[in-house]
Amino acid sequence: MSSAALLRVLTWRQGPLHLLLPAAAVLEVMRRGALEPAAGAPPWVLGSCDWRGLRLPLAVLAGGLRPTDARALVVVCALPHGRGPKALGLLAEHIPTLARPRERDIVPAAPTPLNPLLLTALSWAGQVYAVPDLYALEAELEGVDAAKST
View (spheres, rainbow, N blue to C red):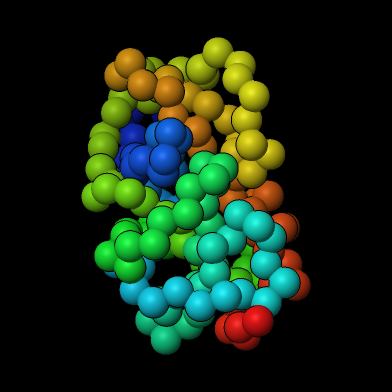
């Protein structure tokens, strides 16, 4: 791929975090709706919400953020292996932005202490973005049944 190639990425905020994912990993952006507890879920899972008739674990990667607004948005991401839940919801505080940066314009950010569920940090257009680690998130969710409430 040439350095002038355009990428398609989705960016959004979650508390103090600015998140970025390749658009290909995003299945949908939706309103959160009602939230139910998820049995055996890690502390960063707020619970589960309905997505097309399936229970979807809803994750918050920004520590301490506990939104109560049912109108919050969810970025629905496909999980790489599908061994547990097939998809995961990542909370978004505002409408996510679909952007088309040039590959050469996105560069690794200076090392910062990252949540182990974040793959890396990237800098683009003067902003540092955290990239969720979908493999780590999926591994942490194995054995969690979002369909059952506690």
